Image (cartoon, rainbow, N blue to C red):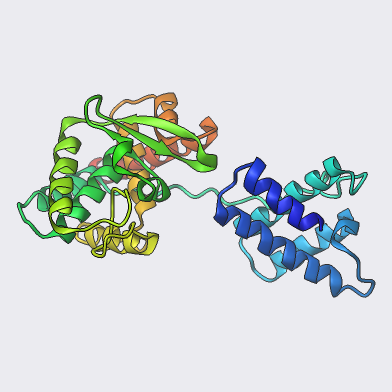
Length: 294
């Protein structure tokens, strides 16, 4: 079946993540069900541009976000390109279709003074594994800008203490090297010593739960949220917020966009440029707070 071949292709040849494969699978199933419910039902590979355009319109009428609609369109575009190359179709029905524009959202971040306050609080000496692990996680996310998935996939051998470098595996298994300073090395070494003393690991994961298994995203999100709530009242206190904070701090301290792009692992500079809007918003806020006639 063409769908099975397609999923195998993006999993093996394109090496897309399992979460992306699952997203594409769900999208194709939903679109196939939509086609089956039409007054004149048709197969997936027989869909034309009008069918796709009508389905996209339906998703928007159902109040799905622009991001969701565009993700669905990307899945269909990738599938039909595969069908075209495989000879299943002769015309790509998605070629003339564009998705809705997404509203530009300026990424939020934690103020530098609040991060300094939090890191100072976390510096207290303790032999509590959960506290030391939380401290190390906050430090790594804030000082390197790693994605949550990249942090969770870290093994011990991906940290080079001699050259002070972290080897991160990002989207589509692309690897990059991120430097770190002595401060982070001290924090990580303290964590490793306590972890090896108190926890019996099941695998080589750098961050593990109390039973020795690799930390899950749910556990990571809870750890980050509990700690960031000590200095912030924002609603969405996620690991990604620290990635935004890292990028904003780098830009505020005169790092150029190209360097930040490489550190974050962005494929396009456009993805990094959004942080210039963040710093401009911060500049406006400072102006409004400081100038007597603002």
